[in-house]
Every structure is written in structure tokens, then in C-alpha cells.
Length: 249
Ligand SMILES: CC(C)(COP(=O)(O)OP(=O)(O)OC[C@H]1O[C@@H](n2cnc3c(N)ncnc32)[C@H](O)[C@@H]1OP(=O)(O)O)[C@@H](O)C(=O)NCCC(=O)NCCS
Image 1 (spheres, rainbow, N blue to C red):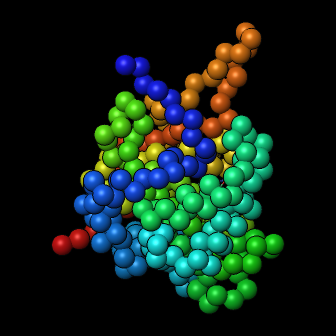
Image 2: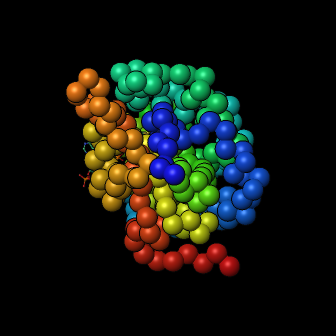
């Protein structure tokens, strides 16, 4: 049977993935057990962004362990950076949907905050000490590969002052490393084609159009290209970013 292309909102895959945890509990727990703050610090040492580690604090949490106020800050960050892209797309902006997705208990977060919690903010109009974050979860690949686990990256956001220093790349590399820890060879994500920075980031990191990405639609003799792409990267998780191997004994 020909693969069916799912129409999925950018930076989102599926609304409810709680089955993923029930049926494949071992895989997410291989990530949650091992991705400690100490691991994050080690991964920072192995491929450091051009940011002084003394200025930031790194944290890894499951969504149900992230405070409501931090989750709300993350929602505000997504709205701040991406509202226009959503609004101008065929999907529109749906805040309830976004919050439900962000609260999914299977969602995993790496939060980068200012170390002293003082004047650093994500953006001048967004006073939060979260300076960057990534969210991802173990999910099923799209048909016809639906029985295969992937690590799906939902959000990557870096604050104004932190951009261009390799933090976005580092966050994606950590998600790829999480995939490797779980024995999952593929990471996936969805990106608006209008988002030049994100398209540049993912291209730079070796992401390519996935088979599940929607094709252009022919409408009255014209081909309408989709406003988002599904990208993926195969192979060994970190793609060499963390050349030293961590010992998880
Ligand atoms: C996309 C984003 C996460 C990139 O974060 P970052 O920390 O600045 O990225 P990096 O410094 O790791 O950049 C790595 C590469 O990505 C590409 N890139 C980054 N910003 C870019 C831009 N504005 N335009 C084009 N390419 C860009 C470049 O190839 C860059 O490599 P280089 O520095 O050697 O040129 C950041 O711009 C952001 O938070 N944007 C708003 C939120 C968003 O759109 N998130 C993605 C959708 S969920």
C-alpha cells in the first residue's frame, strides 16, 4: 500500500503519544535514566557552544517534571519566535493544541537558563531566564514505517543574545545523542519552509527531506508546494559531534 502522507503541524508530530511510553517504556527510560545534568555538562565539554558555561545552567526534564511556569515560558517563547510562521501557514496558530503537545508527559526538555537568573532574558520583550530549549520525544515514524521508533524533535529555540554561537546545534546534537542512547538510529523534525534560520540550521547539521514529507499538490494546473517539510537524519545518533564516548555503566 502506498504510504499515506500525514498532514502534521510544523514542529509537531502527534498529539497523543502516550502509547509510545506504554509499549516501549525501555527506550524513553534509557534516555531519562542517563541524560543527567552531569551528562549534559560532559556533552558541553565535548563540543562547547561559544558561550561561557559559567553564564548558563543546563537541565534535563520530562514534561511532567517541568514547572507550570517554565512550561508557560516555553509556550511564550514558541509564540514569540514562531507565531507569524504558524499564522501565515495553512495550519494557523492553535495555542491550546500547542500547550497540550508541550505538556505531553512523554515530552523531554533540555532547558538552558541564565546561571544567576538575573538580567538575561530570551528577548527584550520576553522576560524569562530560559535562554534556549529543545523538546523531543520517542515516537513512531510515519507510515509505512510506523512500527519504527524515532526521536522526534518538536521545538528548538535560542534567545536573541545567544544566537549564532552554536547553541541551537548543540541542543540538536544532544537530542541525537539521546536517540543513540536509546538505540534509535533516526531523528526527525518538521520545519516551516519560510523559517530560513531553522532551515539553515538543519541543513548545516545534515538533515534531509524525509520520505514522509508532503509533496506539492496540483491544483488547477499549478503545483502548490507545502509550507512545511519533514526532515530526518539517520545514523549513529550524534553524527560525530561528541567524539568522546560517555560511559553509562
Ligand atoms: C533556528 C535557531 C534555533 C538557530 O539557533 P543558533 O543557536 O543561532 O544556531 P547555531 O549557532 O547553532 O547555527 C548553526 C548553523 O545554522 C545555520 N543558521 C543559524 N542561523 C541562521 C540564520 N539566521 N540564517 C541562515 N542559517 C542559519 C548556519 O548554517 C549556522 O552555521 P554557521 O554559524 O557556521 O553559519 C534560532 O535561530 C532560533 O531560535 N530561531 C527561532 C526559533 C525557531 O525558529 N526554531 C526552529 C523551529 S521549531
